[in-house]
Length: 231
Image (tube, rainbow, N blue to C red; front, top):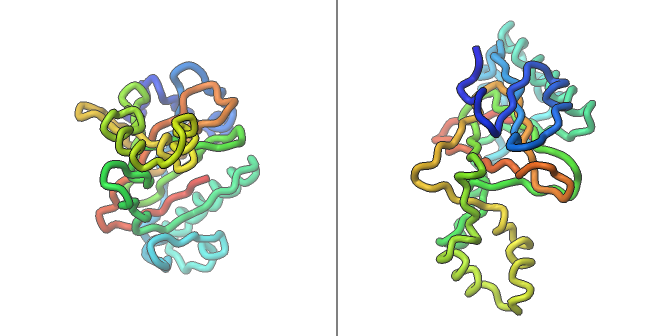
């Protein structure tokens, strides 16, 4: 069964890990999804892990130390295999048990935390990989629906008030504090939920990227833990 986003112009759905890695991003496509229906009890893993503060990085050794049922073992093998695959490709995957990310409430007119629609920036020719095994999943926003916050007149005016320097350096200021990475969705926007179990590759902003970076955000957890692999 194909996922609901399978025909979206920004998303290419593939059926193997090698296709996920090897697909060349071009045109409108800036997100690749290895669509999967995972087996196993991921909730059992979440229930056995210990959350320290709001985010805890979980190691393979932590997973292997868990005493799990047959279905829990199946879920653990899926996670470890994903970590191994990504590591073999040169990535540095991090498995996180999280209750919530830190909120940015420094300014009342602009937010720069991960709950705000944003793009990732990298000095290297790489992409963002992520998979939600349990809990709420992230959203992506089609680029044509994303409004860069620094271009919204009211927000730009307040940022200029915040900036105490020559006009020629204003754009550097916006990049230095990551204001330029964040976007706003119009009221009629149609975000796309990434779903649970799928392994995603999202285009990032870097000098050699051939496509637009993928605009995305973390979900509101609403008190539920998430188990997320990201790199």
